[in-house]
Image (cartoon, rainbow, N blue to C red; front, side):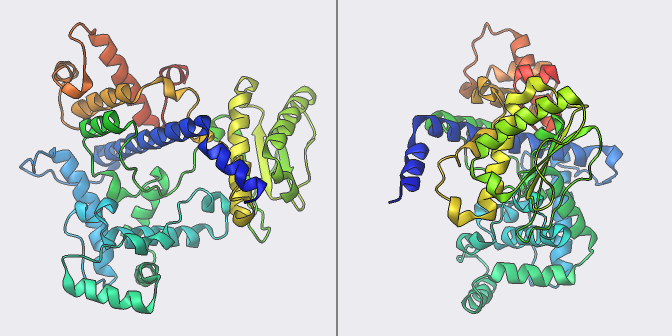
Length: 430
């Protein structure tokens, strides 16, 4: 075993890295839970004009607004399958769940992946952020489908073409080019970072908390579509890349920003590059002119720092995120060469919001459960607070002040509105 691989295994198995992986997993879980509720709010908001009708009855304990939102998404999925001449269509949203290993989900997610390539081509800004799972789809297909005719058809296709899901997706997208349903599903996948047909299958938060209490890890995560995070943008920093054939997908320059350009050789030691960029920012801030870092010609990474927005007090956080971006690009450009690099774990550090671990899993669960009672189930805040004391898994003491629950609810509301895993300090500042 090479020294590099030894270093990688040692780093990956260290307590520090394992703890970071645990926090990153929690962060991903909550990012998904907050994002899906933001999507729900968009659908049920009358101002957005989706115009669906509420069911006259409550279906199996599911609130009518949630039922209507689920029906809106299901209708668009069914329309896409029917217009394309697909042999069958899903009958309910559960059949589109990736956890049930149904082929409908894999075909739809392949459609979104293919459409991503058609829309943005070789642009690495989206390729690096996307979760390309096409090669895994066959492994997850449920060959024990209840529909024997359909199962036999797919098994026959599988023998002829191992990438049958992708092939079927291409056939559908060729028949449904510019289709309204396809465009809507793609736009929402792009906007929220997850697939619309998954986001409205609300899991029971109480079961999630019980699972966490028993295992110390959150339940299985939903498959992401894109993991692009706008945190750097909010800090006034934008990172752009060149494709493998060196086509540069860069932003135009202006006089108020610092532009740093990195060649492929620069990406070998990301932490040193991040430190050099820090020095360049301070030099630029002092002189207020010039471009003191790198040459655009032949470069593969462009880092734009808007000095009208950038705050040097955030330097430490920005450098962590920048180093992770450089590592991600290096691994994307040369995956075989860097698969065992010892610094790969640092990309996990960038996933976690700084100090977000100060807010416990239980506290976030209580806050979001309270949000659900008020915003999905139509309960008053006072009644929701009172009901929370009766939920055994919360373990709330009887003398707990109602303001403590209100604080958890307020944090959950801010996280849903921004689709971000915030802590109390960070959302108060914002």
